[in-house]
Amino acid sequence: MNAPDDSPDGASATSRRPRVAVVFGGRSSEHAISCVTAGSVLAALDPARYDVVPIGITRDGRWVLESAEPERLRITAPDRLPAVDEQAQPVALAHTGSATDLVVQEAGQPPRALGEVDVVLPLLHGPWGEDGTIQGMLEMAGVRYVGAGVLASAVSMDKAFMKVVLAAAGLPLMPGVTVTARGWADDEAGQRQRVAALGYPVFVKPARGGSSIGISKVRSEDDLAPAVEEALRHDPKVLVEVSAEGAREVECGVLEVLGTPGGGLEASLPAEIRITGEHDFYDFEAKYLPEEATELDVPADLPDEVVARVQELSRRAFEAVGCEGLARVDFFLLPDGALVVNELNTMPGFTPLSMFPRMWAASGLDYPALVERLVELALARDTGLR
Image 1 (cartoon, rainbow, N blue to C red):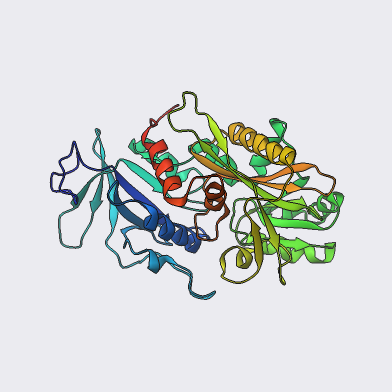
Image 2: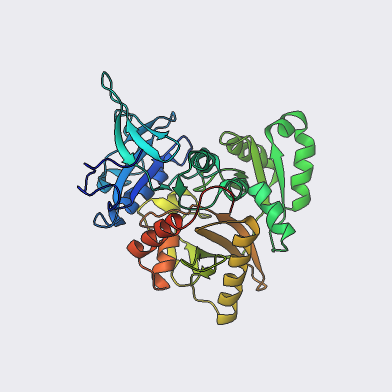
């Protein structure tokens, strides 16, 4: 089914603006951060260029037609995080064979088609969104979408598998081990020995989490069990890594180049995160709450040769995982000058405090232009194998 002639812009189906479904919320622990990201993106999308439809996914997985009010999706206090409106009208993607429509389902009324979806902007962080699940659904529905495909999304979401792929590509990494819920329950002593072999301090984190939720820094074996149990509350697979003591935290953005055969890659100027105040590392509060917990150097004060190395490794990591569209690659710059990859994020945050848009702004691509480029990249590519 094509878009109806009475589409919101009054244009015909052949001349209408591309319809962009901004999907956010979701079932993961990063629901609120996804909402904040969506608020920023909704404010940046040009309504004269795109017909924007905000779609929220509630915490229990229901899709609803959301409000396009960016102010409602901001963090106003530590205990007042935004969430998808659970009372909003249900909505679904309906695949007709030639197109995929958005359909509103109202109680006591026949389904109402909003028109064909040209591209989905899946601003979902964490499992059930950033991990290849929604990407697979969109591939099956034949809908273009922003960002990495199924495999790259799944590999990058699972930090344990991501390290395997990056190591196979010859990229430098911090040593680590994986602890599963079953392994911890069946052989806690054996798991403790594996961690002890790394040497303390270590970081304990959910393998498929994000936004620093469930992460702990452990300085001795006495504190290991509570940290593992906290991480297991968020994910039955836990990654334990050596702490990069004294390292500088550096990040770099990667974008595909629009219109380049073979998918050329562009790397941003790197940025640096410096933790201040009482925060021991870049935790949730330091990332998202409006307080003086961090200092962000955009761009980072680095020698030219280090900048070039960060950009080179970022492009290599992007290609190793098979990313598309965009990614943010995080590094540790160790005291001896060595660079190691910390992780790769296929859907980095777009909140006002987020590093990805800041790095691109410092590189000459402002926020609205960045969002537009991502949408145009998605519109220009096919679904299916590529």
